[in-house]
Amino acid sequence: MSKYLCALFISCLIVGCGGYKFEQVEMGMSTGKSEDAYNYLKKHSPKNPDIPHLYELGMTGHYANLFTDSSKAFENAESIAEERYTKSVSKEALSLITTDNLRPYAGTHYERLLSHYYSALNYIYAGNLDGAQVECRRATNLIQYFKGEDEQYDFFGTGFLSHFCGIVFEAAGEMNDAFISYKQAADNYQKASQKTGIAMPKDVGHSLVRVSNYLGFSDEYERYRRQYGNPPSHSNDSGELILFYETGFVPRKKEQTLTFPILKVDRFGEDDNKDNINFARTLRKREGMVVEDIELEYLLHVAMPTIKSNRPRLSGIEVTAGEITTQGQLIADVEVMAIETLEAERTVILIRTLVRALGKYLIFRKARKENKIAGALVNLAGILTESADTRSWQTLPNRIFIVRTPLPEGNHNLKLSFLNANGRVSGSKTLPNVKIVQNQISILNYRTYD
Image 1 (cartoon, rainbow, N blue to C red):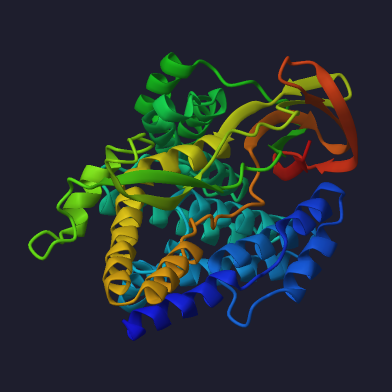
Image 2 (tube, helix red, strand yellow):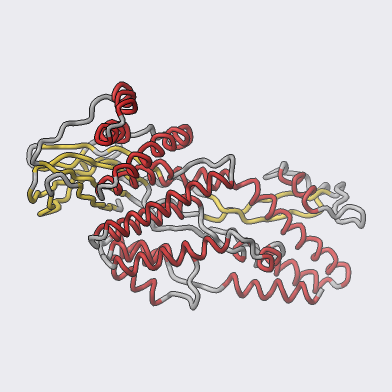
């Protein structure tokens, strides 16, 4: 009993350890002071930064134009994530009697993929397309790994990443790689479309037509041209602008408390009936059930993570250069990825949480029989250590749009018009002197937070 008490109270201290305040990071980014947000995170970095902290460092570093530091943070996060796909037995065991926050966090599939998107952008801004291509190949390999590991893989983020990588390879003149990525993008967008609500963007089909024609793949060219139509024509003196518009913040995970009644007629806890897993499955069906006091043996409280939609005010974009206006198209809905990913994991998380709570309950029952004070202390420790795992990459955008348009060679003042949910212009920004080079692709990203 003393061993369990010790573990519970130590974990109380661990869970109670504070870190940085996300509100400080959010304020820095949304007021255009990403470097302040980055420095705040650096100041509050633990001795061994974990994956969520590294993601936030990478993101704030990206928007602060600290591209090398940003890529280093993302690389460190991915290195840890790869290692954590091998289970840490000691922390897993401890989490069963304390909290999911002690489980090693390996990042979600979509988080890991999006880290390669931002790392590739870092290389692009540094003028290093070779580095951007390396990130795209890493992302492609990661998608293949996810597909091989899970027959039920939902493909969230893979269409967008393959689409983005096709653009990077095309910009680098690697047309075979671009063709493969665009084909994968078409396939992956379609596989995830039922859940994401995002149809395959027209640009993917047009890119397949254009690149297959360039490569002399006549059969594929004819098939894609019939399927997707002819892509927009480019004049000989033009280049291309590709702008990724990112809006808002992904909704944060919150903690909610759920209750499950243990009834007096339940035989759980008796010598011949201590199967936590089976009884956890029984309890799962009693979520929120109201029973009479006379029937109630114990009311089990557990903490679970939850995510609620939090759409930003700005939800679209138009880009004007001279007489040319192009409307953006939604290509990634990170909010849907976050909500659906957590929903898919909910049953597993809930069963694990109930098993852990039942373990604490059994310790409490035993302690109470021996000593009422000890029982009260164990019960208190169980309550204090019961917290939901709300770790995630919080600075991710809510949605990502693409604007792809041919523009004449030269410097352009781009007018970005931001649209609200009704499709009306609700703000604007001018990006001056954006350079377009003949027969080249210029890749940019821009973020709003409203």
